Length: 352
Image 1 (cartoon, rainbow, N blue to C red):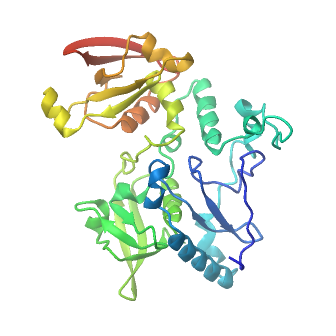
Image 2: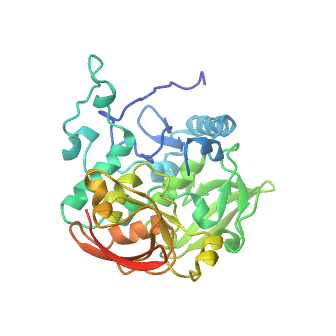
Image 3: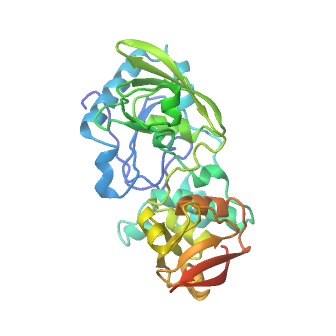
């Protein structure tokens, strides 16, 4: 730690968005920078609630990442070209969060003499308000705003949280397995970028817009080799967004305030629902304000949605949410079919 200069940022107010680009749903994220603002690495990943944080992060893994950063720093600037892909995109809509129209009531500094919490811009609000701005402009949400920073698990890759970049599991019949990736492989590069953490891998995937070849350079038994993964056009469609705090507002926009959970195989069997058919149970139905649109349309907790906005095939809540918000605009009306007490009913929801 003594070889690093530590700077802790506790709010998003005045945060330089041309530099600090990361998964804004994170509660902990690290940027490793050179004094000239070159990004060496990122650290901090998450796939669920706070209790599951150890699934992606650990002090041991952070220490290995920091050791790798020191090695990059020692070789800098001779290795600068290999770092180009890790650099943030300077072409952002707003340079700091409080410049966003929906956040312009915030100041660049916290109100320590008044309501400190109320004056703080939370990181997730950066993406929340930008999404809302796009919806209010009458446009559909772009794909990358709906599937931010996918984990490599969508490709069948699970990383060891106690290491910097070591493969822990490879899913059978997955994209990674078909390419020949193996447990114990050390991921050295991805799209030519040095990889020092799971967050580094997510950065690459977040920046990957289309399907096609994705090259990983791995070290296996002391030797390096290239592994080429072939991505389908919808390679990230299974990326889980349900846990994200920013998904709460997406549910308002696309589901009228409902939170939907997928039927288990047992529930499908008990309820006589076909395996490939949509079956999402309303776990929560918002009661207040803009989150009460579904409630006003007649929806209740426990209702089972079997058709929504023309989609009837089985899928998780997050996938359906992305399909709806990527196709329909604010103000559009969508029809849904649901089952309550064994009886089929219909409703209509105006999207926000």
